[in-house]
Image (cartoon, rainbow, N blue to C red):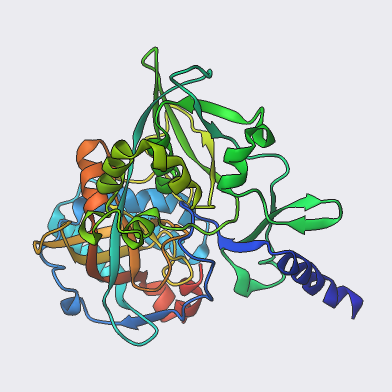
Length: 394
């Protein structure tokens, strides 16, 4: 009996000392982690997928094959991934037939049975930086501190899959890790963990929100950085805060609007950023990596990778998305692949569209806040063998 109670005691200790439970995110969470949404995947026919016959499926194959580098180790995906690999070089018509023959579409529904949800965007930013601190380059990116504790209890409690406890030891107690404000007021806490230094505090803030990016050094070298860890504090939207304070109208509370506000109000900027307690730590990625790494562990594909809530949508699976282009009513039908996650991406019908790298990608991502519908394409082997419930929680 004592051994059975021990894990519960650990949970109680961590919770009593106010450690935050958050998903392993690409970005920090907007709110403290909510209970897992009830996965609702409704089998449908292909004719129910709005825009399926119009979407270009060819570019999605390469993205899905990247997923297969991970999924092929799961028995129920092996055959599907082998068949997908054989489709290289085939026509669009043949590839569409492949998906229709080897997958069963399941519409993703909210817990109340509705099918509409929020679709936002993200991108890979470019910052100017240096490997050494100077008057120009004075804002550090940090690697993961040694004292940051990350506790995974999913082997004992499967319902906590994709959740982590984060904190630090204070004597014999586990307490919350330092907030953004704590770090800003006493940078010596992370002394020696500086990875790079950049010249723009706002761009660094948004790099933490995106979770990955590139830093151009003075000699022209490009360093790619990716998400390593997070301090466990929930993310507070500074755009929402600016609206509440009357500093920005709602329609201007985009990434672009916030950056413009910061340029106009440099004296207020530091205080505003510190209102977001969440803080992200980075790692340097190999130069040969073809794209930022998502939570699945594979490089993301511009315009084809989605960040989803893995408690509702299985990581690695193809997802057909029906939404609209940013700030327009123009239809956007796209076969995507669920390859990433994010603390702000919570709920069944909820996704973040990866636009890629560059100014256009940043512009589209910053504006995107659309309504959309989602269908997960599940292999026929999952459906025929009754594994759809397992697929929902992978």
